[in-house]
Amino acid sequence: MIDSFLYLRELIEKLFNYKHHLHLKPKQLAKLSGFEFTSNDWMILSQLHLVLRPFFHATKAISGRRYPSMGIAFYLLTRLKYFLQHHDKKESLMVKHFKQLLLAKFLYYFETDDDQMSLLK
Image (cartoon, rainbow, N blue to C red; front, side):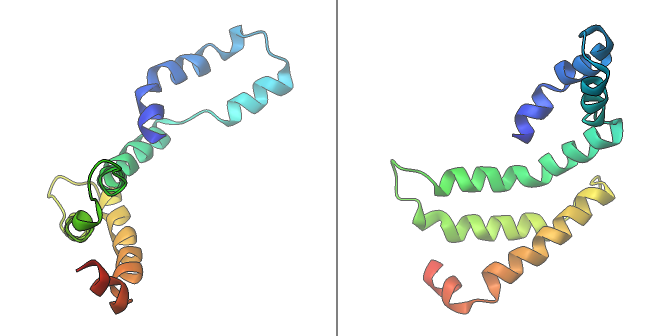
């Protein structure tokens, strides 16, 4: 969904730029204005997209129907953990913070349960 939203950003911004030409009632216009994104909102969405993209690809790979996907689960989890633990010098503080938050949850759900990890290995 974030992909689609970012892909359609220009169209969404045009909708809000021309909202006064849509012949809406004042109440509808006020409600529509409440959904308008600021440039900061777009930046946050873009940064979140960057951090969540590897999870999307890992989920697609594990969800394969035409090939055995359980065998790659451990590898993908290892790669996701590496992605969350390592920071590029060019990464923004927001991306680093998102990664830290996700890493805490990742470790909680995948490394506190030894039985679960041993099943994947």
